[in-house]
Image (cartoon, rainbow, N blue to C red):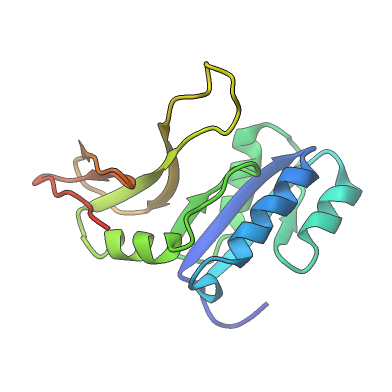
Length: 164
């Protein structure tokens, strides 16, 4: 483990989905400023395939439980960065996600944020875009919602729009 503290810890819960994990880690490795991140996979289930998918690209943790909450908490407990990004194994980030998060967090009123999430499946129940929480920091403030087309941020008053 490097002595350099990362700026962003990406925590990926994965339960029996090594194929999706491999694709997600491929995307994470292509992020601009990927060197400013650490990647932690909190896994349950198929150990051999998960280890193969994550090999050399993420720290693995195998918590006792396998619920999403247990996986997320186990990954977060290992995180070294001041910012956590929770990314599901079937999700993909924009290539400039690290810079977008860093820019948003320069505002001391910003507590957390989300990238717009859409589904590629043709199922009508999944077709609509919806916000998906992906990053958070440990700041305390009264929150109000602010929205932008690329990122939804929860900010303390006064509200400010986040623009790319």
